[in-house]
Image (tube, rainbow, N blue to C red; front, side, top):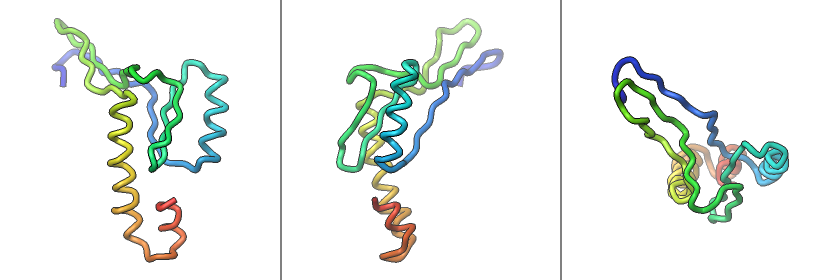
Length: 111
């Protein structure tokens, strides 16, 4: 997306689902690592984060000859909340429906 002779950089970035208990352990560990930022939200919209509401985090960017820095991927609290709605919809209305009611896999996906 930037032409020949350039470089693309990407920060370590991770999106995943986990239980509230596992999230609490991760949040405690992140307190020891001030350079690690996180945003977490449940299906109901309750969130926890160590970034400010207006912060923007560049996740990927490119450096190419004779061009300004290109920054195609950013993560911020507002877009994260939009992503949350899409992700949980796919999780519960897509994947969970592949399993019968009462199936352990479906229960995990719905919780």
